[in-house]
View 1 (cartoon, helix red, strand yellow):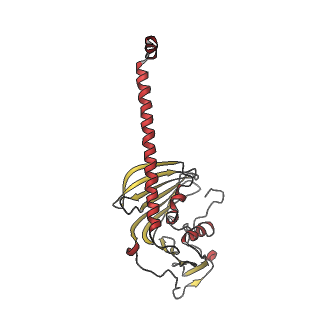
View 2: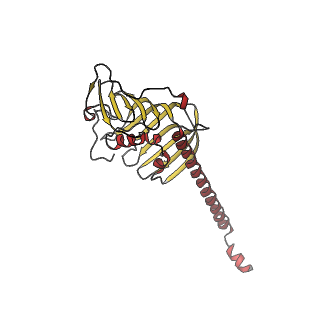
View 3: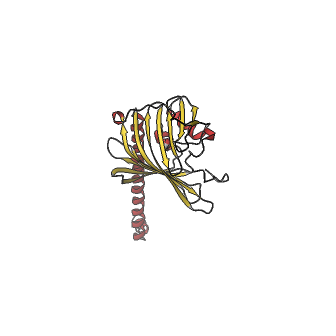
Length: 270
């Protein structure tokens, strides 16, 4: 027994370092697991909070990166506001340097009004806002700002395909102290800042592409959150202004996120 003990301690320095590293790795693994659990809990609390609100509204500033053929990254900035009444009412605006757009949905009819064009289009899409979000994205390629966060099951949608989760601690967005969380999937990295306290609304949401060179981002920063009785009452139906002409949704040019002067390269991944 004595000889075996002496032989095992032939290099005491290596033994101490190995043992220390082993303890450090165990501690680090436990910390990462705790951080991941906290991040998921915080994200779930935001999802549950928004899903529990019968109505809410917010203002937003958005920036959409595009990558040119010579690998220059350009940002397209816009601002707007959104009002939401569950389960099937929504009003959204987006104003940028290229478009001034208003969108109304009354549970049956979607209206997209290009204010700068003096033209509007209407499409029958009866159903909930969740159904509308899917139709706008998949059929009409006109996604609402940060649409994933508006879904009733936003936690499940956001966590789909997530391979890595990090709790980055606190940050401050627009003077609001937030939890900063980072997530990775095979196609994108995304980060979200969620307000501390009993109103865990999102303050900033950033999606970074991993499939396009130079990692273009889509960023939405929120402000002026209101819920319940704080939300101003409004009529979600659309009344065409005098002189506005009605066109098909396909002919309502210049109202998308990407200005008409930019042409999507069909060979690139979206």
